[in-house]
Amino acid sequence: MTPEDGQAILREYFAPWIQRLGLRVEDVGERHAIVRLPWSDELAREGGGLCGQAMMAAADTATVIAISSARGGFVPMTTVQQSTTFQRPVVGKDVLIDVRLTKLGRTLAFSEITLTADGLDEPAARASTVYAILA
Image (cartoon, rainbow, N blue to C red):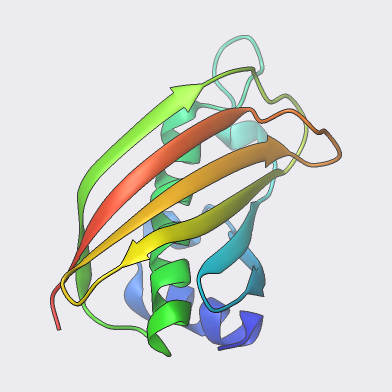
């Protein structure tokens, strides 16, 4: 799968409000994906930091891209669990979402996700997800 294939999945399978986040697939591989969440003042909360809900939605969506890449294309799936820990605010920077699949089974997929403000080394947040693969 290519980043362009990942973009096509975003266009075809996700709700308009997710598409308005402007996510861009930067890289895909056998068991990973890197997706960029562009900074937007519309996603900032009071105080100027990027809102956690946007980061959680982006991490959840990026997981679909990583699973699709590992499976060779999109298959029906749904989130079973997502846990997110926020470590530092993001202000005025894009966020790179790095999804690594830790286990890909026939019916379940597990991932670890690191969200890092572009140009910084320390993560802004970490997440983990469990997905049910429905096909």
